[in-house]
Image 1 (cartoon, rainbow, N blue to C red):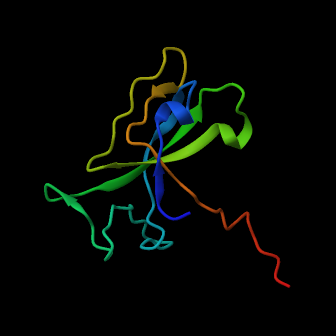
Image 2 (cartoon, helix red, strand yellow; image 1 turned 180 degrees about the vertical axis):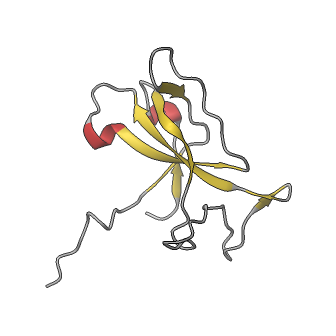
Length: 123
């Protein structure tokens, strides 16, 4: 599968979703080193940063928990990347909890293979 597939929030999270933790800069693995971490930005086909009103569109990440109690384990938590010029401010937590209800607009899914866990057996 190449590229992203747009989906409706209600189709992915019919029981809602909750932000767990804060908003963090997404690491640009191609441009970061052990010593220097570079935040990911939206880039065009040639690799140049895409500007909106002269500013780079930065990529942030949040951990989201599925509100469906039938979903458990690793499947209940997903890391979501958010594109914004400035760091997004999450909604307030539900009183007495650390969870913040969220609705993700413009949601798209992209296939990703965790090569640290999925290894081909060389023969």
